Amino acid sequence: MSQEISKIKDAAGAYRRWALEARKEYINLRLRQDPEIRGLYIRSANRVAKELRQLGLKTPSSYLRKRQLVELEAALRAEAEKLRGDLEKALDKYIEQAVDGGAGYSQTVTMDLLKKAGIGTPGLKSVFASVNRQAVEACWARTKKGLHLSDRIWKQKEKYRDVMRDIVQEAVATGQDAVKAARTLQQYVKQGKQSLAASYPKMMERMGNRIPGDVCHEALRLARTEMTAAFGEGSLAAAQTSPSYIGMKYILSSSHPEFDICDYITAHDSGLGPGVYGPGDEPAYPFHPNCCCIATPVHEQPEEFVKRLKKWKDDPNNDKELEDWYNKVYQGRAKDAQRRRAVSKARDDQKALKTALDKTEKELIKRKTEKAIVFADDGTIIFEKSGDKSSVSFEKKELALFKGKTLTHNHPMGTSLSLTDVVLATSANIKEIRACGKYYRYYMKRPPAGWSRELWNDTMRPIVEKHNKNVRIEFTEKIRKGKITMDKANLEHWHEVWSRFAKEAGIDYGREKW
Image (cartoon, rainbow, N blue to C red; front, side, top):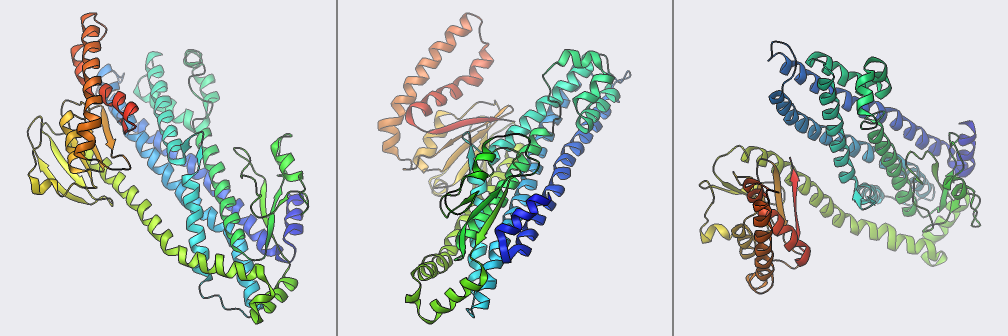
């Protein structure tokens, strides 16, 4: 650790105090984040355990029966979804704090240098605020193996639900009652797989490698990596906005276990010193999951840079680099702030719409008759109408409200979007049409060029009719051979049609399991 501090001081020079404060902020974030993430899992396991005990009270013997395991499955789905939401909120908070912490160093350096040169900075804070917001957005937009951060959080939710289900089922299969099964769950989440091996050897032998050693491990690794990436993103974004920025210094962590890519990157010298990369040449950071290497911006030392600023202030032609910075970065960023606010609002609206849809569709699937609800982009309900068991009808003046909006409705039979649904979407130019049932939520999104009657009649309808015919023939044959039931065929028919249609027509269609 002392070696790391010495290297940070050397890289920062006269700005060492601010650089060390930034490092301290990073460490504090790491120390707060890990127990908070683990706490989410422990509290979730405690809630599931409570549900298990309550189910056990419904039977004289306290042993769970098949019907109660079905009830528990619904509780596990709900709990996994809550965990996903809690993880997303926690990561959102730590990403914002990490970006601010990483950006603080270069922001402070820049403000101090301009102040010493007698240059006013009335708009500089808003410029850096815009840079920070952009850095946060970049963290959520970044993909790894084609998955955004929200997708990777979703995968953690699915894995958690599967693991909890497996443990409960195995606990029941090995003769544990509801109370013991609940205790097993809590013990596993708090202490890991090894703690169960001693207490329940037969159970662990049956499960083998089906459950991870620590159910929190991947979530913790994800959180650490993304927080480090956010800190680096904030450091880089603020540094590249500063006129005194020379390059980014990458310092090998003292806890680095073995030789890998980190050693190459931190030792590479392109002329600015070992591990220092000039503006635009900075490598992607962090270098691997759980990477603890340090990214520290390198700035021109204050005395010489303040002299440059004063000369430029007297005559902008004295320093072309500073004049370009003022016009392109300082002035340009200020103008860009308004556009960034619009992007931020769009992101907030998207989250609000998703929340509104989740809440609404969970209520819709309880209905025995159809109901349609139309949402604006910010999640506000602008129209709703009830129908009968299989349809909702609309008047012409009502259809005019649907253009560019999101329409969701329930299918009591649980089937996918009907042909009538998609015809409605194309004729009313609906942005996204959705249908929700007992098992799945289905969606189809408008293509970038928009819907039109001509597009539907001339291009899309023939494709749909072709796949509808083929699926009907295939499913009829499967029913005849006993490979699929009539109910299953009815449930899956239109989903299969739309899946094939979407692939051929390039339309965004899919379904999500509850």
